[in-house]
Image 1 (cartoon, rainbow, N blue to C red):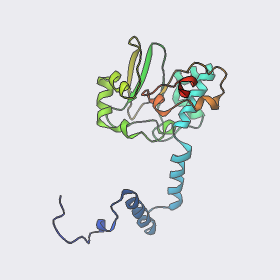
Image 2 (image 1 turned 90 degrees about the vertical axis):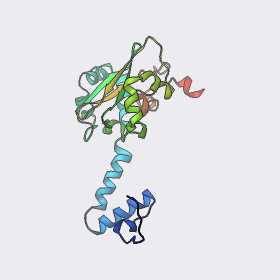
Image 3 (image 1 turned 120 degrees about the horizontal axis):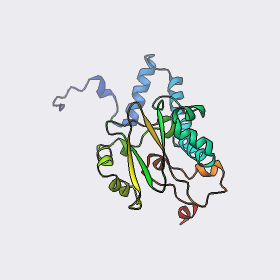
Image 4 (image 1 turned 60 degrees about the vertical axis):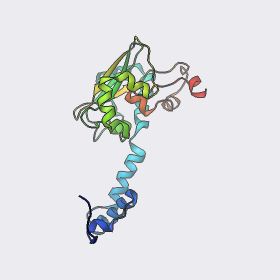
Length: 210
């Protein structure tokens, strides 16, 4: 509804227009009123900056590449396996791992909203939540992959997994050639967030230097 009057003494008019400043003003106001604990806010920020995110997912992928028994257990019961590594909590309660091979490429979407494995991949990217990605991923996955710069052989099937509040997916990308003697830490550096959604590939060390 347009503001067609001059009286701007409403509470909302006291907040700055810039979103960052607006959030800070709200935080200050709520803290002064005793409605939020600044220490709790700091703990939440620290969690999302340092304790959850794609690095956790990369750890799982690298470990699956290196340890066949771990990989088999992950594909059988991902929820149990990632929980044992400490990666559990909100938006990560029901996990399924799917593996890319020479014949199948997996890709994840949430057609209803933005269900996403936060403990493993962090906060979902903006494009993952967009109407365009959610609609197109299931109708024309190869075109969507092309938009991300992913070109697959024609004989490789693309399997699209629709996340829900009950099930979230982690794509185990293919291990690139030329990494046979790499350790876990080095392999983790190759794994990207998009490769664990299926909208990216893990490239060989040679490809990364060209």
